[in-house]
Amino acid sequence: MSPVSQDQLSKAEPILSGPPESREFPDWFRDQQRAAWKQFESLPNPTRKDQAWRFANVGLLDLSPFKYGASLSETERATILEQSRGLENVAGRMIFAGDELVERDVISDQLKKRGVIFQSLERAMVEHAELFRRHFMSQPATLGSAKFAALHQALVSSGTFLYVPRGVEIELPIEIFHWLTDENASAFPHLLLVTDELAKVTVIEHFRSVNEEAPGFACGVNDLVGGPGAKVTYVCAQNWSDNVIALQMNSTMVDHDASAMSLNLHLGSRYSRFESLSRLIGEGARSDLLAVAVAKRQQEFDARTLQDHISAHTASDLLYKNALDDRARTIFGGLIRVEPHAHFTDAYQKVRNLLLSDDAEANSMPGLEILADNVRCTHGATSGQVDEDELFYLRTRGIPVPVAQRLIVTGFLDEVVQRLDHPAISEHLHRSIEEKFAG
Image (cartoon, rainbow, N blue to C red):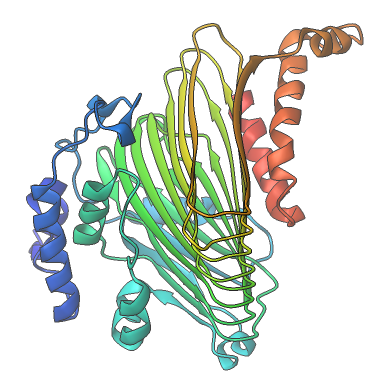
């Protein structure tokens, strides 16, 4: 029998045993991880009495079964590589299984010559330490998941670093895959995306499971930085297996005259919580927060957002749409906050829920906190069932009820996807939604 390394042993351990000491990181990063682990241990578990976790099924957040992912077999590696194709044409691609980098398709020499950096976190923290340290998890987790943000910082061991320099436009999207592998495996996905002045980039992240039945745990963080005049588009396609517990924390900084659009598609997992903090720090900044969720059986999707307007003449627009069937549940807690002196803010927030079952449950808590004058802010949330007249119209044309209902629901969700100005990604998201209904 071949000898087993310390790192292989650590990967069989529960994640609650703490950060493996065998990892080779710079001393400053190891110190940060140890401090984050102490913070994780000191913070209490969330309860439903906490406003930030109101309505959430916090009983599902038992982390004791979950362990570090084991090394991949050659068969698993081949399967993952074969299935990690979402778009035909991309500027670059990274594929992760657990926290192991399986493959990286390098960017073109032309982009490299123009200063684009596309590499793993562990390389970036050594080769670009100053830039990395300035932006890595620089924003506090203020939407309820500080404990899980600390867990992520303590245990993250790989991820994607993407830097786009001044004036560079990456025309094709960057594609990233994250896979959960064996039963009770864990993953800590991380994306650090920094764009300089007038840069432009689109990134799509896919979250999937090799085994569609296996339970697992994912705790991810995104740091998105839009420099002055930059344009950032981020797409999350979450389709974990139906027994996965997942948390994703997104932090977006938008500087003056820059725009950031995020679209989150939620299809998989048993419980998925997504927190999105968008901070508009410069005049003329704009943020669009979009989301689509298709929930079935006993799935629960929990979204918490903050549109934080810090500078004057900023704009944000949130549109979340959920379709719920069976005994599924969705939760939305969102706040538009206009800071003092952020005059002439223009902010919107709309949540619409389509209930396909009498047992489905949608909870929406939109809110406003306005500390400046001369602003325009609106918010609203609605829940309803499939329009009977629309259904009758389709049935009179010979379309069976299940097909007619699916057409109505996909049309309802399509408004969000169409906001994305990228036909190839939009088509991929449409296919994913259709597959969820077909399944």
